Length: 75
View 1 (tube, rainbow, N blue to C red):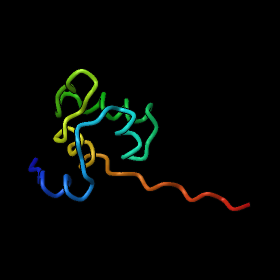
View 2: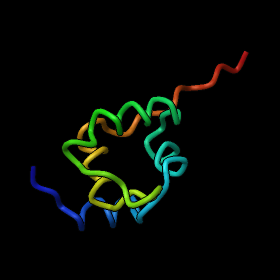
View 3: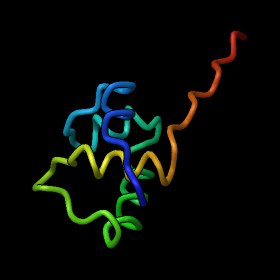
């Protein structure tokens, strides 16, 4: 899979981040993100301690995308 580091880094201002920051960026809960990571470890590799590299973040975004927030009801 080919990555374009410049594209994601400039558009999203990606830096290395932890699970909490990554779940906020991707718009999913920590539980869902954990399942995504668990399924992707063989392809993207282990994070360094608790920090995910830009390449790993890009891999997850390419594979799962960024979820759109659900609109809030104004009732």
